[in-house]
Amino acid sequence: MRIQIHLATLRVIPGMLAILGLISPSLAEAPRSVFERYDNSGVLVFARDVADSGPRRAAANAEHMAYIDTIIDRILVAGPKYDAEGLRIVGSVYVLAVQDEAEARALVEADPFHAAGVWASVEYFPFLPAAGDWIQGVIW
Image (cartoon, rainbow, N blue to C red; front, side, top):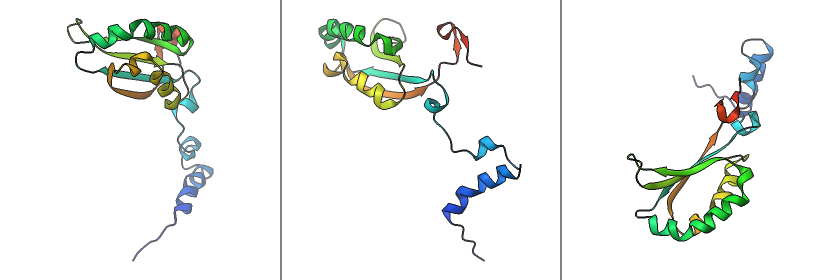
């Protein structure tokens, strides 16, 4: 015996179960991103340097710092990432006060370090600052 259920029916089932009190109404809702649920969410950015990035960093540093000054209101925290010994810069970390990855990507790609080829790769992650001095406590 083969049972066939249409996709439209599957979309209705959670709502019906919530109405009947069999599941929580929040389980019946479509998942919402961290950006939709929290006003203070942002994007965490990990940029990994190319091998021997020192000369490129040095050449672009003044322009990079000037650029950072122009977007400082969008930066929650940022700085260089060091190797395990704390001796050599191997990347950059940003936590940006933006509402999606596209906005973060635009800011990072406008950074002179990006144009100078300092970074081998850049990764973007939705981020929720939830506890600590930086946010003056906790969000719960």
